[in-house]
Length: 230
Image (cartoon, rainbow, N blue to C red):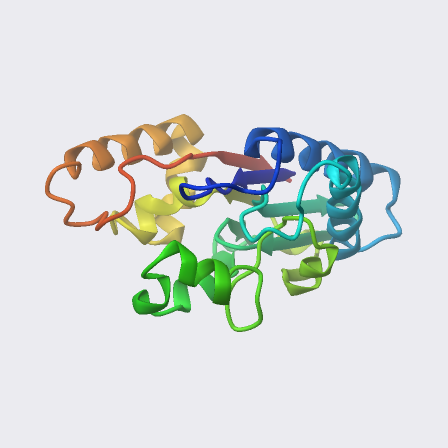
């Protein structure tokens, strides 16, 4: 299961001729092929290879060292008859439900742990934080960031179901505080991914003017949910 969320660049150039959707589609295609064809590689190794393969496609035409070069957050899982592997990079989320109903979130919280003052301007983020030690990491053009992802492996019998979400979908819990991770998982399991996204959209619209929850952030964010029962 692969969930990617393209990172919308701030105003200004990206050093790239291609769009974020172009980048995300090619990275996703490489991940899809590699997770199936090279079972002997870890998910970190697969992500690194997919980033390199995508970068090679446009290295001759684009400035891939630009801090705003097209990039994406990643939630990636792969399972076999005996184990479940997972990887999370940046502010995507992966929720794992065990046989007893317990829901365990797998999060890369580096971006969330940064002080607001550090995120004051796009220039400050680009210079000091984006894909930098002490900042946060996304899948962009450098395969080395794959080693920074949150990864793990669990026995298959310890995972009954899982859900991968972009940060636009996790707003239900992380921004609007409508329920904890278990409540969010229950909502998706019982009513489906569309119901979660619709509820988030309603909350965003209600907060459009007051900004009690969203602060200075954009009203709507891309919201994707993938749910699997094993």
